[in-house]
Image (cartoon, rainbow, N blue to C red):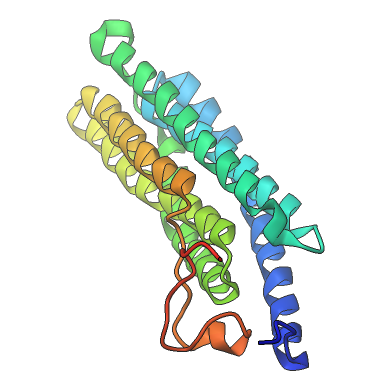
Length: 230
């Protein structure tokens, strides 16, 4: 059976690839700003959760850059395996650093202080990241790209982290529960480990029924994006 894509399917594929590069650029731009604010606020407030959130933003930039590098190639699939490894390692690095810093805080290394800037950046991310993640994941699934979906999950992780961070910061600010900050950081670390394992295994992506067939890559009633090609 011929693997040549029809003209319409090829055009659609090129549109999706451009869209993924655009989402990656948006992710990089926002997360650079987010990282600067979160790391500064985390340092001022001695907040493990805020510092972990800022580092996650740095890692999201790394992940998005890796994705941009992959899709700058005429044959992105050849770079997919290495890109997944980069994304996975970034998750693990985040988990280790955040967990160590949280444990240090719980052991008496410093009590987190109130951070208005942290609350604001967490709330903004909670509003922005779900939309960006959904759009990127949809394009990645239609294209059948594991790395695009993995990067969208990295973006979605930012949503979870934003919610956890916001809860921890608010509890610390309103009730004086400084340990809630460290607890939030440990939750962030646990989520990062889970996502890192999935990215390492390549267990990140399944095509949208009916879409892959339009691209000539799978039948409309199958969902084999995660199945190794033979």
